[in-house]
Structure formats: structure tokens, C-alpha cells
Image 1: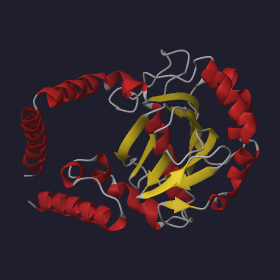
Image 2 (image 1 turned 90 degrees about the horizontal axis):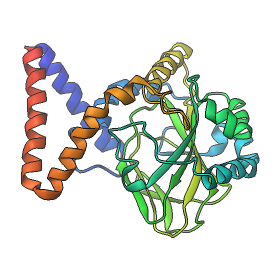
Image 3 (image 1 turned 135 degrees about the vertical axis):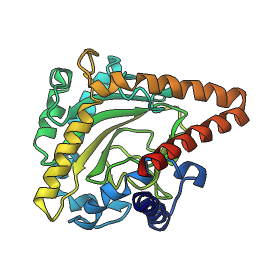
Length: 301
């Protein structure tokens, strides 16, 4: 019983933390089961030990090592545009349970995933990859395209041990193409960058007829305790290794991509059910959640 009450207390405290910390929120029905709720205890050390200001957005100057990328944004843009024209920035077979690639709205080209082997990044984008290698703490990087008329709905990314740095390369340069972080809009502009805490609620939309092409990266959040920083690094390397994939050779892929395909099929089935019979979808969804809670209760007792 003590274990069960402790789990419940941590869960309720995590919900309260998210509601107090964020200006923008997910609906309660979604927040109760969203991954971000369960990751709060894991992320707390990153928040408490952060050497950069806490908040949804951080001035780019706070991480001076990023200046190298902004100074060379045209070189990076030229490689990205060549890859896009050749069809190499494309829908991927990674994250099979993710909705990002739904309806061809999101396309990507992986440049770096920690030290996992992505040979196509070196062969097809050597200048960008070489620049990224010179940025300390940058372990994830990709070219990302949001197609015309598309959007990514509001979501939290799960981990606070990194900060999201995104650099506009070829964008509509329009107020109709924005990133919204914690309720505040940021307009994508060529050659301009933003750093934000990806655990805050964020979304993006492109209501123009021009693709939005950016360099999207994660850079380590500087922490006061080096050993905690190293623990987060090794976790990030392990986790992202589960889902990495080469841009040309799909056989070079993490085991997580292969194992999560049944989950992708389940989510596709639930989407179809939602379209055809919303009451049945809601009943099935909550029945599954209650069953999982029941398993936790049985285990705790």
C-alpha cells in the first residue's frame, strides 16, 4: 500500500508541476496519460542543476558554441536544398508509432544521432556534418521539412537534458509559418535561430504554399554536476540508438523501430476506430488505460 500511495503521490505531483510550470496546456484527458507526465521525476535533476536560465525560450547567445552554425547558415542551406531537390529529405521508417510522418507532412534527413553510424550524412552532407562535429554537446541533428498547408499538433518532447536549437534555412518568411512554444509564436526566418526547452508544450504550422526547411538539433543542457550530465548523456545515447535510421540504408536501424511496429499498427487501428465510431474509440481507450492502472495496483499490492 505504501508503494501504491507513493506512486500516486508522484503522479499527482507531476501533474501539478506541469500545470503550474506551463502557460499552455494539453487537455486534461490527454495530459493524464501523456508521456510528459511520467517523465517529470526523470527531468527534475536537469531543471534543478541547469546552468542556463529556466524558461520556455533561451537566448541563443546563452550557448555561444552555436554561433558557428549561424555564421555558416548559407553553406548549410545549400546542402539542405540540394538534398531536398534530390528527394533525400523524405518520410522515414523510424519512429513507426509516431504521427509526425502522417500524410507526408513531415520529412527529415538525419545528420547525427550521437555516435551511431549514419554514413549517408557524411556522404551527402559533408560540410554540414563537419560543422556539427565542431559544436560541443550537439548529439542530435537533422534537416526537417514541414510541408505546405501542414501542421504538427501541440506536444511535449520527453527529455529535459537537452535544449532544442533550430535554424531557419529555407522558410516562407511569413507569419503564416510559425513555431508556438508555451503559447508564444516564433516566426521562421531564413538565417535566424531559436533555442527552446522542448519539454514545454509546442506546436508548429505552415499555412503557406512553400515548404519550411530547417536545421533541427538537440544540444546538451549544461548542468552543474558533471556526473549527472554524463548519466543523461549515456541514457540519451542508448535511447536514441533504439530509433535511429540511416537515410539511404533502412537496414541500418535501431531495434526500437522494429519492436514498435506492432504499436504503430495498434495506433493506426485506433485512429480508424476514432474516425468511424468515436464513442467506441473512447471506451476502448479508457478501458486500456484502466487495465494498465489495474496492473500497477496489483503489482504494488
